[in-house]
Image (cartoon, rainbow, N blue to C red):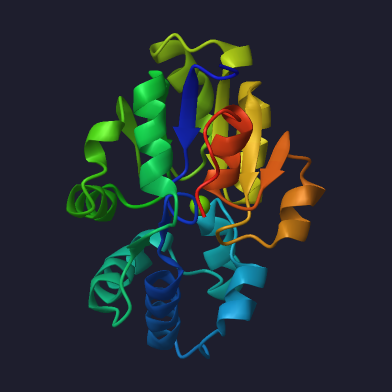
Length: 213
Ligand SMILES: [Mg+2]
């Protein structure tokens, strides 16, 4: 098998939380009388590390002051979070292949844990790194802590920041078109590979298993 360890981003990679994230972002903007964003505008402007995005849309406002409002609005969102198609199957396949799985996410630790537990996905991961503002700061430490081997480890994510984090850590980046960043932005950052979804990743890693439709 090409990889012995996979690091997964959470939002847009394993779950779809774009509707509640947009709802919560607009709730925060409304507090400061900034007009709401459409889904398209949000996808075009949102980026990680997220303090950069907030500095652009709400200049001079401390991110720490926004986080409680964001969390509260996220929980009140009429549209909830869903597990992305093929995510559970991918994690199950990794378990069978004894591929070690980790989470590296900017998602708030509390919200992440609630979601992962509710979806029954928590047990698939050897270790979880959530609430990470700049993933580049942690990738080296994760590799070292878990004695991960550079050539057999990859980071799967849906945003440019995930690609640059993988590059920073010296590992492959598997970019996914199921999340926040448009494909053009992913390609501009030169991912090692780009996939339509997780089923395509699994199929690529294990061509002997039939494609699930
Ligand atoms: Mg993501």
